[in-house]
Amino acid sequence: MNSSMNHYKEPAPILDKENPFESMMERFEIAAKIIGLDQGIYNYLKAPTKQVITSVPIVMDDGKLEVFEGYRVIHNDILGPSKGGIRYAPDVTLDEMKALAAWMTWKCAIVNIPFGGAKGGIKCDPSLMSQNELERLTRRFTSNMLDVFGPDRDIPAPDMNTNEQTMAWIMDTYSMHSKKTETAVVTGKPTLIGGSLGRKEATGRGVMTVALGALSKIGIKPENAVAAIQGFGNVGSITAHALYEKGVKVVALSDINGAIFNSNGFNIAELIEHVERHKTLIDYQNAEVISNEELLELQCDILIPAAKEDQITSKNAKKLKCKIIAEGANGPTTAKADPILQTKGILVIPDILTNAGGVTVSYFEWVQDRMGYFWTLDRVNRRLDRMMHEAFVNVYKSAAKYDVSLRIGAYIIAIEKVAQTLKLRGIYA
Ligand code: NAD
Image (tube, rainbow, N blue to C red):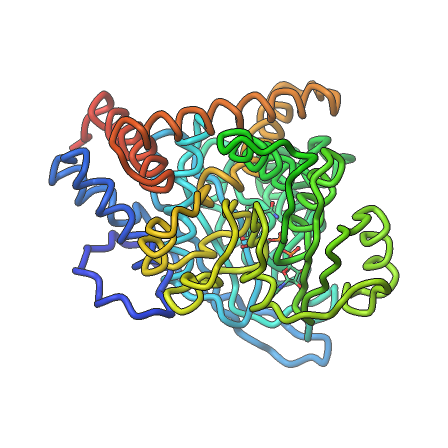
């Protein structure tokens, strides 16, 4: 295991397919300049506090030894223990972890929860691994991370290709070493072992709250609104269902296999059942099959990218015909696309606000674990709705105050909060 301070280098020129860390830094730099951020604090915030690369050896089911590379980046922990997901994917990189960890710092600051930002992952292809191999991988990674993880230090959560079961294995491994059950070391656990009601739905519910807020700002009632949603996984399907229940007409949806369109709108509850049975949207009756590119370019009130990063770029931004973009995914819009969307007058609700419902209920889960007292679903949802609404209002105020986009307004809130905390705490030397 190695852990080191990272020294900042000027980012390379941004190409259209953006390195996520550079994309994050472009926005950070704009916001930092606008508020005249002190150079020392700027230098402190641009570099992650800790970057761990660890080798994870496991014996595969066929008896062969394989070694995987695991990462955990703690961008900043000045607001409290660091918080962020763990993803398993063949294309996990340290740069991606750095960007996602920084986004977690900003997200937690925007929704006003006492956490810093982190992200981790293992470079592996979970689709080629058995449950037993995944369990051994997770437990060995956790044991390598015993000095990093902890309810008061760094708290993982699920991300791409990890789930409640992965969190249960991390919690159990950590607890075995602590000689006591430590439920608060991870969030996104099964409810039976200290998970929170409403956690699974929290990100989509938060996306719905800010999407309705943005519609109301431009004077469109939910029952008159038309939405298109890219991605039909956890975030996309729950957002679609929540909007559908509020009367929004969802006319287009997609998954990795392609997109479907119906100008009359879809019954989302029926579509969720269809996907449970058929594993894809694409063969759903009463729908025209379109491409993912066509979905993004549809005429609609609100477009919700909820699949992956780099979907709205300088190439397709000019062709978009929506009024609002609510970024359910992390990093779906490249930094180069931002000014094009702004010139077109498209209102972009940034990812670091839009999808912060997930980490907000993760915070509730951590609080409940530490109290040993569990809330009703109604209490979780009411508190989530209130915090998302407050964050939305604050981002709007910040954007208006500095006459900037909502994205830069959101970065300004986050940077100011972290910077003020740092000034109060001071630098220990
Ligand atoms: P998921 O794996 O459950 O779903 C992803 C969906 O996107 C699937 O329907 C998949 O088929 C689709 N997809 C993948 N590639 C696509 C492509 N090229 N075109 C169209 N669709 C494609 O993932 P998720 O948890 O819903 O996460 C989606 C995004 O939201 C990610 O960027 C994630 O980081 C972000 N996010 C998730 C949460 C959460 O709580 N799950 C919280 C914050 C942010």
